Image 1 (cartoon, one colour):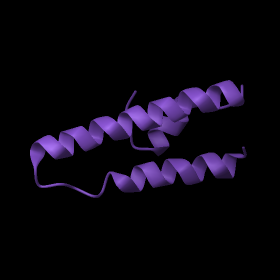
Image 2 (cartoon, rainbow, N blue to C red; image 1 turned 180 degrees about the vertical axis):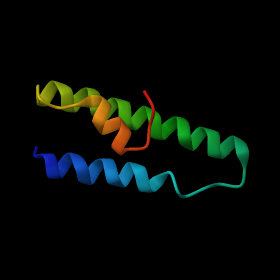
Image 3 (spheres, rainbow, N blue to C red; image 1 turned 60 degrees about the vertical axis):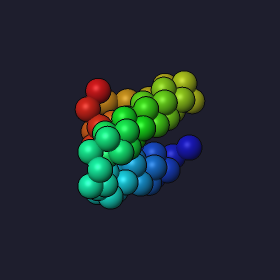
Length: 65
């Protein structure tokens, strides 16, 4: 994959954080799922590309490590 692909995926994850649910429990569950997905993808991308920067990707996803 290319840097452009990684950026597109990170942007999609980042945008999904703006869909706020008024139900606090569902919102917390959604945020947990976003973190899980972003971290799982970052792990896969790291294995696929040794130059992949996991920290930069998670920052682009608006996810803290």
